[in-house]
Image 1: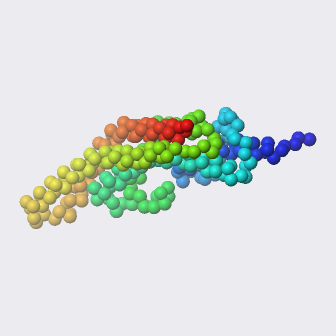
Image 2 (image 1 turned 120 degrees about the vertical axis):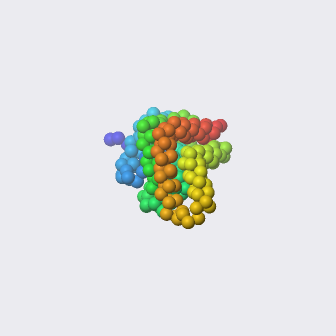
Image 3 (image 1 turned 90 degrees about the horizontal axis):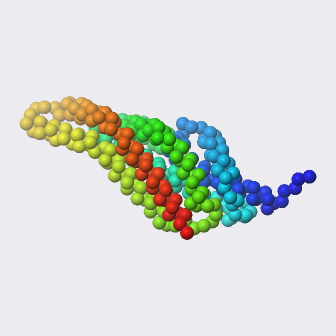
Amino acid sequence: MLQITSTQLDAFITAWLFPMMRVLGLIGSAPIFNNRAIPRNIRIGMGVIIGVAVAASLPPPPAIPAGSWQALLIMGQQVLIGLSMGLAIRVVMAAVDTAGEMIGLQMGLSFAVFFDPNNSGQTAVLSEILTLIASLFFLALNGHLMLIEVVVRSFEFIPIGASPMHADAWLVLVRMVSVAFASGVMIALPVVAALLITNIALAVLTRSAPQLNIFAVGFPITSTVGFIVLILLLQNLAPVLESLVEQGFEHVGIFLHQLGRP
């Protein structure tokens, strides 16, 4: 009769559970994977499958009881690492969302909003359109496969264990927020500049012809100019999005190097 000791059972559980927590953390925060259009059961199942595949190639984790406080600490650490990697890429995608918000505001379309289940709040239509384009481009670049590769390689830099996490690594994520905001402004800048010139021209026209109803002609003109420049912008958006995705994964690599530094 086969007998399994409690030590062997704990080793078996922790060998599969710890890597799975990191993978599930990534899937819970990374773009594409955390989309609510994908059923939760499928996302969890995907995380379990990837976690099992990763765990089979890793060395045995620390031999600790599965229900101890130390095991809970390691599980929390793995979830935090996975969440951080996913959020780092999500911040990059937020640059496109920021650009859409700015463009919609300048075009006078800030009232055109709808409920977004992913953000659990109101989202501008233009922002959602640009985010959808960025998501499709992310898939075209195999970004979803690169995310899986990142989480697999992360075990080389940060082995499973209760090792301390360096504070310098979190500064990398903070810097990514500023980079994403600046990138969003740069994406929206052509449309914002064109609309600024249009508004100045309308202001001069109003001064020279006071009888002109600026509210009747201003909105159609600004909307038309905004859409024309936006169409021209979309034709040249691919290199910008590719650069954003590359910067995002570069920052994730720096984050992992800093976090796993001895």
